[in-house]
Amino acid sequence: MNAPEGRLPRTLGLWSSVALVVGITIGSGIFRSPAGIARQAPNPLAMIGLWVVGGAITLCGALSLAEIAAALPETGGIYAYLREAWGRRAAFLFGWSELVLIRASALGGIAVVFGEYLLRSFGIDPSSHVLVARGLSAAAIVFAAAVNVRGATLGALIVGVATWAKFGALALLVLASFTLGASHGASAVHFTAPSAGPLAVGSIGLALVSVLWAYDGWADLSFASGEVKDPARNLPRAIILGTLGLIAIYVLTNLAYLYVLPIEAVARSPLVAADTMMALFGRAGVVLVSIFVMISSFSSLNGSMLASPRVFFAMADDGLLFKPIARVHPRYQTPYVAIILAAILGVALVMSRSFERLTDTFVLAIWPFYALGVAAIYRLRASRPDLPRPYRAIGYPVVPAIFIASVAAFVINSLINDTTNSVITFAVIFAGLPIYELAFARRAH
Image 1 (cartoon, rainbow, N blue to C red):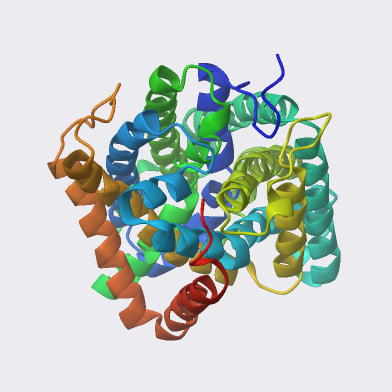
Image 2: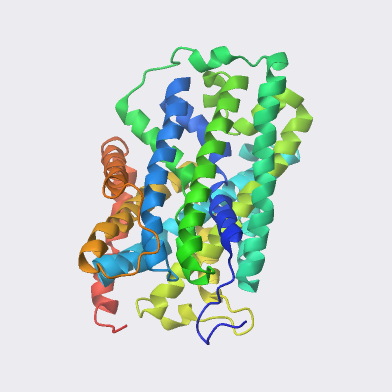
């Protein structure tokens, strides 16, 4: 069935939506972030604890945001929630940040890992061929954009198939580690080894940023809320089920890494999954896991490309960006201009910034908006008590407060311990305020 002219059709069912949450989230983080986390928190129990804490924070956000997603199932997700709760200025600031900073950083960070592991699968050291790796990363972004211009159903199908493939890959890594690891030097002693270095509160806070990068994606389904079937039921279910699945697989995967490799080796290994499989299966294991990581990264890239351009579409449809960005393809019924714009910005960043800078910037820029979106639950319950709420947040009002306080704490920690990057990031975000006042403040919906 075709959607009304200028509208997007509802094509995503429950399991497509769950797969989208998981598919967007499991990308590069679980395969790349553990090394940085182990360096910042060089204690195995602390490292595992961070993954549990990150998952708990994420679940608090998911349980809260699901209420708003069900009540306001609109394309644009958090953008729409901010607009309804805090006004057009706050919504524009989020969309502006997505446009110039957030989404391009995310696409770049995911695509970099895809390019690196593609080279690694051929036995080529990506650190010695940086431009080639980045060129492959840029090509992956372009291809993902082309797929999603073709249609949300096709994009979701790719995410769904790849999601189960990478769940299988991570399950294989976990099972192989615990069943074969003992004969290849693995040991439970690794879990209780003493710290390989000092544990500082500031460093642990920065390590949590890397953990949250790996968990990010839990809210991206909300960006495509306008295309989910039976959104009152399927949106909260998909967000919660997807988040619970992520916590389980992330904790198990990190336990497997630490069982096979001592934390000192994890800290030295940017490609920790490859080194784990090398210890178990030799060169064949490296090739196998590289292929799986490529699938995982591309799936996440494709899912992010499916969801995020809907923010630009919703903004333009509201008169807060130029109208051509809201154009729907006459045949494929997708926001093709927004998708192409996201791809161009992603390619620009992937060719110019490192993985670490891309991911740190992304987390620092978007999670405060997640907190503001979750805080909308308080404002909307007060200002719009009659708004239909098919799902009401579990643990309200404590659970949303835990999420908001956690985000505030790690932002403050970043400002103290990573001052330059933090200041630059927030300067770019707040540069959107004068642009809003000059160009869009007087526009009517």
